Length: 566
Image (cartoon, rainbow, N blue to C red; front, side):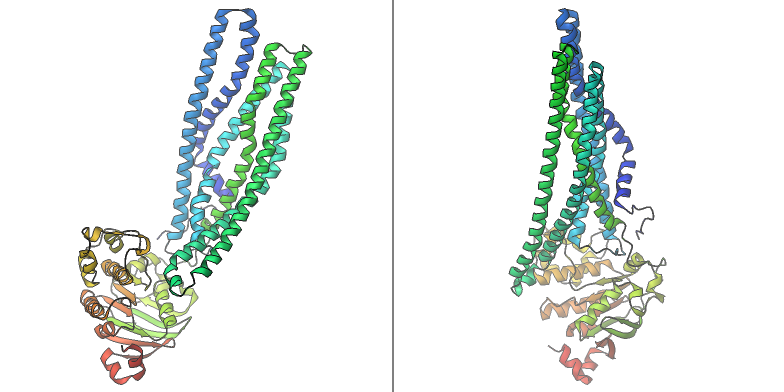
């Protein structure tokens, strides 16, 4: 079983530090290359100023040729450093986003559920959008550093011409970042709330898709749509709010950058008019005032992306740092398939007590569906052992002492609403591709007619949630998967409710035949399955009230006869 990692990040800041730490090499290479790009961009107007200052005024062809060669080197450096720098950073970004997506998915797929108050749709948003935005920090830091390089190069070059120009760039940059850092905090908070609302909308639509069939059945689709429209509208309004803040931020950044560029240009023009700098230095200053707009724009946008990455990292921490619902044991079930339920009290169950011997086929006729559902959830370890009274023993060992993954390898509980996945019939029956019981399982579940209908046989495509299969076909496919697992203990919950009486009779006989010598428990009200069992336990009002064969119970128990006779 995958156990929680004690070194797993606990906060959003820890997640960002982890991302930065394991991408140090790629970020270093990317920073160097992007620094060369920004330095080359900034060097271009400096080179133009030097050309005007020396080559054109001196009318020296040799100097002019050397200057043109220098410009070619600068242009080549700018082109190649951008190309390879962004390639390095985007590869690291994509890889890091993949790592976080896998880590979030691994948390959701662990045998022990995590104590997190998030629906599946919200976890999906965290595993996609939030993982991507968190990984953006890999690009943000190198771009921030390279932009700083460009600003420093420009400030130094202008300072060599006149110290006032250099100081103007430095003071202006600090002032711009101070204003924008305050605004970026609001963007981060707004983005976090937007992601939360989008996640809630995703969770709502996931729930609606899951329950689409029953919603159509009782005419609840219009009310469901209205409910989704409300949460989606909330997400839309929050997105518009964030977009407005982003717009104000971008407009403010652009305006401040333009003011700084204009200030540099006007100051340089005044200094040239006053003959305090040369014409070449004026050309350099004007060129830098234009070229510095890009690194300043990039530099001023970085705080916003840092806050967005941090907001997404905080949402990922909700999943990654959530504690497990229960701490399972470490032992594995011993050989054998006996099952003991000892005075279990939970939900609708009231001191439920019975025992199933190894190799026995027992059917449980539950008069109340809630009792059946609670019992199946306990056996499936969906309910942690500390949440109910009494004990469940598998092969003589208490469930609380066993590793959950080992329990599920030993005892399979197949729910009545088992999921069907997109793929093929074969991948739904044998997801791991290791079962040797697929042909027998297909035959026992009476899925042979579905296989025979299609030229591809078991390789026939199945849509998501089995949308291209009937209810009976989906149920038989789920049963085939459970039988193909060939576990020591198999628990089936209403495996034949969607099939006709003839098919149900055949399936009941096939289950008894295929599972001979293996422990099998079926929660059902089907007369055919009840008749095929070695004995029947009657579960009424949370306790076992009767025990015998199906036919003896029919002859002696009037309530049983009314409950199961069709």
